[in-house]
Length: 115
Image (cartoon, rainbow, N blue to C red; front, side, top):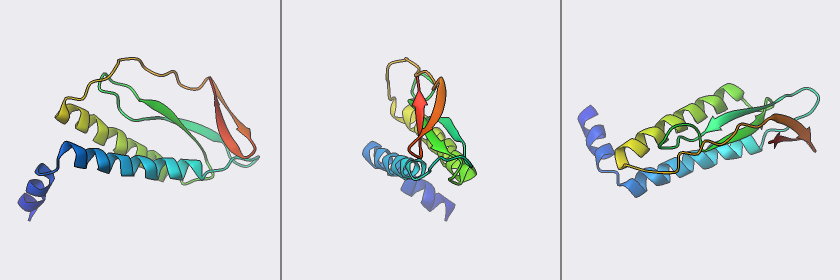
């Protein structure tokens, strides 16, 4: 049975794998965007994505009103999958690394990154 799964995975095209990554990315962004900040929650950020040269594509901002362990685990999984995808398919990009937010603030119950 394990061989069958490996064969099925091997038959995925680059577009198939890219679509899987996009679905996971949308799930993560939706979860982060549903989080709200207030006096009892804090704003956080995490490197999101995996550029071929290394480092994240961007920083995802969210609040602790969401299940942060789950969100952070999804982001880690996504980052690893994108890194594997980049290597497998020879993806290239610029090597610029985005700056992390200098600070975060809560505005109208939404966490905002300050650069």
